[in-house]
Length: 383
Image (tube, rainbow, N blue to C red; front, side, top):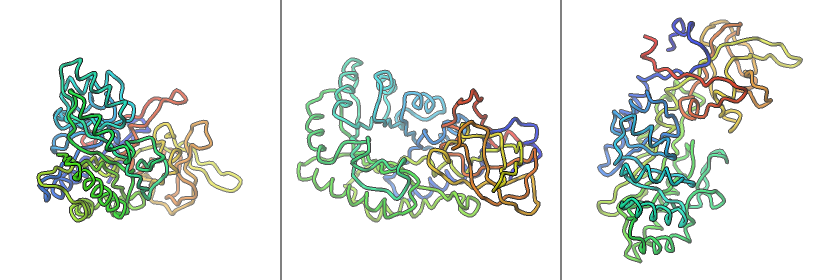
């Protein structure tokens, strides 16, 4: 699976992306979403903004879901059409809003009346009419880590449901905004389809409330959130997109000609990426054995930030297993990738692959401890 011999002369740590798997994943997304004529998929750029990865995704006709001006620029540079870009985020700066207006992006997902007022003012300044969707906080708890749950009333995201009528009334007084939809997102790494069913039921209720006011929106955006298998990436390299899209087809009651939008990130890129790191030392502690590698939380922060589990493999060894804590070189006690895991016997210089790292890996890397950012390579570069 990994071209280990060709990795030997490459400076570690680095990200390795299997583009064959990425293309197979994108093909599956298109096949399954394509069974529903009014479904549109946008790639959540925040998951991975490597230009080589973005370019491949843009070739498969996905739109882009952006949460910053920098992501809008990255999407445009990678070939995503401006009219397929949606822009979300609870704190949009003026220059970011103006960038979206100047490029006539498809939609701003608006999270407060204060933001709506600024968008209207800036659109008027530039002689534009901004298309907006209101991000509604549905107050639904997803079965996932607290740090990546976004749909509860206590979270900073979205407009409270009880304020929806007030926001719509406010928008109708503004000459430079056009309300084209409603936007939702309840969290990430969701594997229980019941969470998405609950969202469908909540949207159905909201649409019924709007119908009583003769308010119809053209677009419903349900965000993303579909999770991946971190335990068995080889057994489940492509998420169950069929079940995911069918859940919405079964439970969401769309109006005639209403369009449904998705913002998938992790499920698109997580499994195609691995962090490749070199083993520096095997250290025998008082109670445990440490495999000390040259990658750290600066290169992959998910285990430290979310207590996330990633499958780790020694791709240089086929010796019998031993038990290790896999740790990095950063001067922080939280710089730990895994505790008490079995790996093929480790030696200095061995290469380890930290799997399912294509999402929220390279993109979240930092220069803490004055460390260089890891490079990202696609599989074609090792042929």
